[in-house]
Image (cartoon, rainbow, N blue to C red; front, side, top):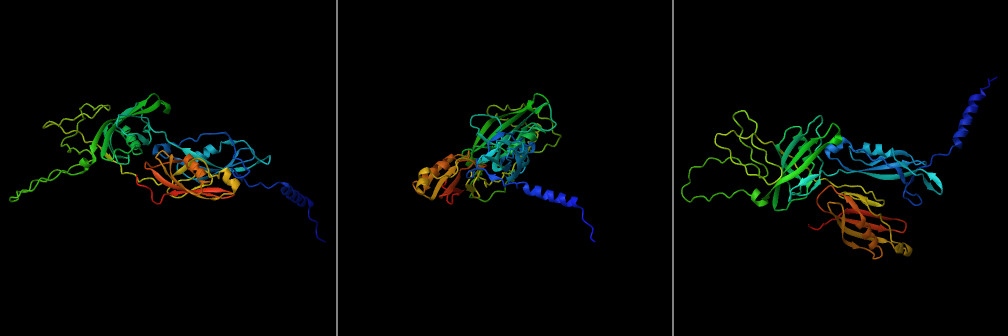
Length: 427
């Protein structure tokens, strides 16, 4: 006779199975903004904290997050859709603290999935400029050196590249760590392009002022002055050689000393005795460049000037991501941050009109659009033109971008694809 099995474990297993079957399965999160699913309204916003390392390196951009909001309006999970190394963690840490009003569909709270772009932008340094010094368009302020106290001064002379980057930076005054902090910031600076036929040089002075021990009491005052203009052809063309004599050749003269690069100051000869501190009065930052008299015979040579040439960084590629629904960007298009999404006009929807519209346009360094031309059905062209006119891009280059947007208006959905123009006009 077989022994009977205990009933208690069997009854417990049966009860658990029945309870699990009675629990409703968690529904998949609905995508906000689709038909019948409203976008959740954020009720609590926490601003991301800019990482200090990213500030020091001038890292900026748009981190795009995929955020799942539960039925109570709490952030359930976050994931990265578009990554900016150095900024992702700060964006996620802020998003986890956000709260939303519950999203309802047919009167019932539901879980929703929403795409959120988090923009990290750097405020331009406050730079006092002499008339004629180009506008500063990109860059960070010199960071206060770690462990330094009491404040300090540093002055550098800059020579600009044709696209506005700093090509050469020469330290004229100040030592480490103040000069190091100034040079590190200058490598991120970009000015408005100078005139095509001129080379511009000027001085930038940084005054590190400490009002106390806290970071809020420390500031850096920046001033640009001493503008010098040089003709590009005069600077870059070598002096013409003297005409050769028709008589018998004379003995070869000694080789002339090597000349410095047109954009850098000549390096003084190395002193044969220990270099003494420079006793000359410092040229004031404000005002024009003062002429310097040649050193008297037998006088000690001035101390060598440190010349630091920063290699021009490559022009950044603009393979951006669209923050506008139903707009896709092809490689070579900058970030699209805001504007209207593709929607067919009411009259076209009522009449069932469909078709394709191509809009050619340009984008300035500031990110605003300028329409060039549009082709397509007359009933649909105004909607496409209005959408492009509302778009705002985030540029990382100083030149003008030439793009074309192809709008596809269908009965159920409208989309747009943005790509670079195949044959852009010459500026």
